[in-house]
Length: 256
Ligand SMILES: Nc1ncnc2c1ncn2[C@@H]1O[C@H](COP(=O)(O)OP(=O)(O)OP(=O)(O)O)[C@@H](O)[C@H]1O
Ligand SMILES: [Mg+2]
Image: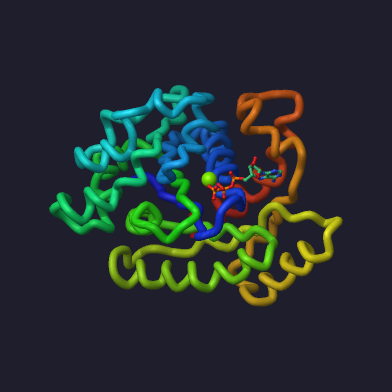
């Protein structure tokens, strides 16, 4: 059975897509079979991993259709032999209409149900989520084994963390008893800014057992990855270095 890891927080622009994309890519580079699931109608993970600019290319063949059909298999795109993608486009934003008007099962478990047919094939399923506590995020919480809470080192993100943890606890109680918090990942840190360093330390004081030791710093080579893609390049080793350290910690936590 695949181990399913989701990246989330109801705050935008904090590195959810960057981290889920790079994590999926690095797991694949280690030889694992990986399915990346894009649960954000912005489709950024789909663009990032496939290199496709225009999401119209995926129209009618996305995670929305997979959920409607109850089977992900026909909609999975092969990025290469070992990295596969269940893409998203703008229409994913319409999913509540389907879930609450037509879907026969538990609306929070529709993603889980459509992934059942492929769980046995992959080592890891990595899910990117939108910046909201929407049905897309709840469905990711319904299927994940582990959640990585993304913490951009800013005040607004700081106030989002306890509310996200409450949502995770509610999901654990109601729809996914085995759900675990893998940890809180500090991202986009800037050591030249005292406010960023203050937030790096503050969240560690609040959640000493949850924060990952690795802090993902803001770095130009990392910021350029969505432009040049994830394939090996002279600067990619540096671009991935924080994420590679994070992945080592993540793997040791989720295997416990
Ligand atoms: N470590 C980093 N260093 C520099 N730039 C980064 C880093 N991580 C992410 N970025 C850039 O920051 C921006 C936001 O990142 P990303 O799109 O991953 O955030 P997000 O949380 O997925 O946003 P949204 O909530 O809109 O989905 C992007 O332009 C990305 O390229
Ligand atoms: Mg994103």
